[in-house]
Image (cartoon, rainbow, N blue to C red; front, side, top):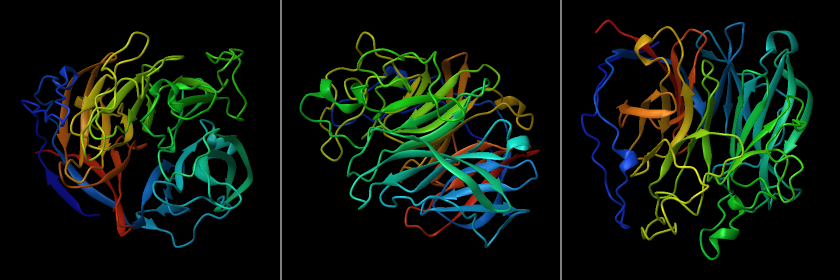
Length: 394
């Protein structure tokens, strides 16, 4: 493995860059400073194509999804040539393809894995976000069953969401993006504000795909029963703090306005009626206002956008000073980074940019060894690697 020593650094002041709409947000002005934690970067494996997600098996293997439609195994630092068979056909294009992979909480006994992907209709003209459950046996997915298909069919090639997370009680949560629904015309009628579809939502399911009877909108007219929260744009990260039980989400904004959200049952997160972004290119205003009664504010937002991606809430032993922190991937060409976000309860108390400008980060996971694993993603589909942060004595 290649090890590179890196000193941790802090941002004593976060200089905000206003958009063409004149955007300066007080939520960006978290205090600076750093919780000093030197670390090294090790390369775990190379040779992947658009890795999207990682999952760690009890035997030490790692599962990796490649967005073009492959499920791979990494064993002892080597990427096995043989792909895992049984993967469903995916609608590859734009941001779509094979996406998240998560193990059932009782995987050691039931061998169940959950995989999200962009699903096409018969001729591929439309796509949506779908979820399968399967049994992983002998490098094959057996008993594959689709347990959820989002009512989010559009011809667009992006904003699938597709992040999966299990809570401490065994309920499954998954994000569904707004599917690039336009932000012109009557924004009150935008699909992300219409809970009769799944566009722009976080959903909650039982582990077999059925709907829990205590979901917030069960039996409510005009609301799909799977919905846990709505008013989202493109949720690219979804993770529970396994100590506190709180659910966190990273949301990819437009030109500015990427968000870190604390997700609460039944809440409306406002897209596109409120937010901190602007229209691509021209920088003109999207939102009628920054805040509205009955709609949630982000715990933190980024202007300019870092193109938020995977999210991990760290509670391992390897980095004692970082316990309880959120780690947010950034993919933007000018703002690639791993953002360390200090949380005090559900309030952001500090932010720090790590690995600035070094990697386009697609996913972040805490490994079973307490190290922080990062899937890097080459935008042109060239070879990508998985790296990890290791404590240093520096």
